[in-house]
Length: 415
Ligand code: CTP
View (cartoon, rainbow, N blue to C red):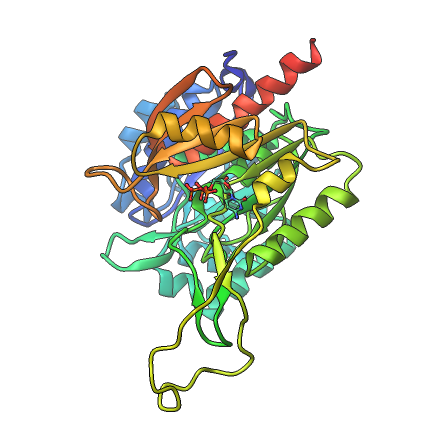
């Protein structure tokens, strides 16, 4: 496969601002990835950032001087904070701490990073990272809104384990995700002109107004695929069940609860689009739903025995899309299997009528489970070959799949 990623950041200059937060250690990996993709990287390290990573590590990785001080006579005479921002094609702040976001929203220029941002005439990408309570607090949210209104771009934060042992939204996006967003700015867009529909997350099937049948799907894989396709230039519609994830940037997202609603939204999207090129069904659709959803809460005290649930089968969204009159050119399904992966995957691909099937092994000892960030994936492109993609993060799997889709369409085009 042609490595399109290797070419896309050549001659591009990234000014990376690293502020104070434990996620600063990931900035080292980001610099490494940017360099690997041939970008020119210059780092500005704030006083807070210096508590977590050293100028020496950043200088070694970026092969450039690292700037830390607005008042450095040497740096100001040699480079100057105005030039620092003017010579960059894109300014990336990763991690962007709550304090730095607040200062930037207020336009404070007391430090080098604040001053160069005020003087900047280049796009700015923020990758926030902080404790989930700090992220959710109205003050931070208001500052983020202010910055968004001023044209700042945002990636993340994502929900996950925090360094303090708590869990919630506030974790910085992983370096490969940030890299992908950066590439998005510079036009590595082999899917531009293509339209895609992605389903993601679980479905909740109501029993009564307060109870439902659901499953543990987090939606991470489907959302990452929607984001990866959009980053490569596709026009993406995401139909998401109930998840605790932000809508992916640049993706038109519809929120649904049930399988019937998910199907209706997918069909509406399919019918209203002139053509839909790609469908990726990553949702963990509930196979059954209660035959009737009561409009009042079942009261335990007024129900002598545990109520019986009559279930009825839900529509198969993937199968419906794969057999639709306006069938997308490439329909991709997912399979979560606990055993006989290869045989089950082949049968499922045929039964559903999809072109590609991504199969995951779940529920085995040592196998990744629903909701985790990593999974062992296999891709079945036809009835014969099962490609082992190994264990990788859901973001990496999404990027690899999006690249594979791009290659599929480019070879299609060449005939
Ligand atoms: N799927 C769907 N609609 C359904 C059930 C599944 O669109 N009602 C899609 C999923 O999004 C996934 C694929 O079908 O892409 C396979 O889902 P899976 O749950 O593994 O398959 P099932 O059809 O439920 O088969 P089984 O439970 O027998 O493994």
